[in-house]
Length: 351
Image (cartoon, rainbow, N blue to C red; front, top):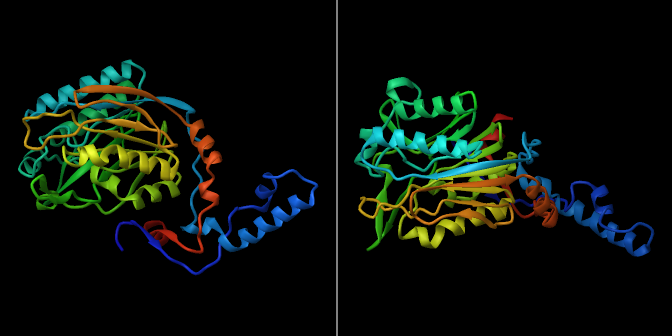
């Protein structure tokens, strides 16, 4: 398989409930026969389940985050057919967010262009060339450097040779491009009488998951439709991500049903933060976005959200909540590696 996507595969191997018998001992008071019986029982379970082997290769522990708390901004921008205006408008929103204390700014999916197959080739930029060939990414790099903030630049149409991609750029506080995520799962759907859209008519799917270490933590990146695939989020968690960011533009059919549901599911399943950012709704556009940009906590709780109008959400991410929730529900120690495995193909092939 290309690109390192995750697979769930059954296995007949045996696995452990706890990674260390010492951890089992912490659950009980020492000295009683009942305690010894329980520890013995847990040790037996440990020899059978081996949860650490439910991730192949074994999961990477999240590194200590560079900050304990920080403010994130979700800039729900209005998008027009005027590319130059969109760039200026996005810059102003980023500057305003930084002035309010945001250390990380997240922009929407396709914020410099109308969302349509007709528009993608017209608005596409050569990100690698930079400069005048990519005014959108050049602006993001300049603002990240001047304001000393991290920017997850939503996504823009990218031209690379004869191919087009839906691409998210991540810029560090020095203005350098840290990572580039090309949307892995293309938005090809057909709901008769509601919505039909085929990104694959113009766009090419990306071939690699994207995880990046920034000044505010280790971040896994997805774009819109990527959020529907729990394997990608699980892979990022197994690579030690602190939180996941999904710029996205759900529509008026799937948005009310699935937008919040998917965010809360990805957060609760992996016990980490999930941030999303949508364009503001334009009822007169060819594609009408749902809006409702949101930050979800590691217990699946909605920390901050909005409606469909243009706005910027400023919210706090507190990493201590990740450890708290993982101690409340120790899912990592309770997986059944004897019954299933998540395979990170990219890591496995590179080992």
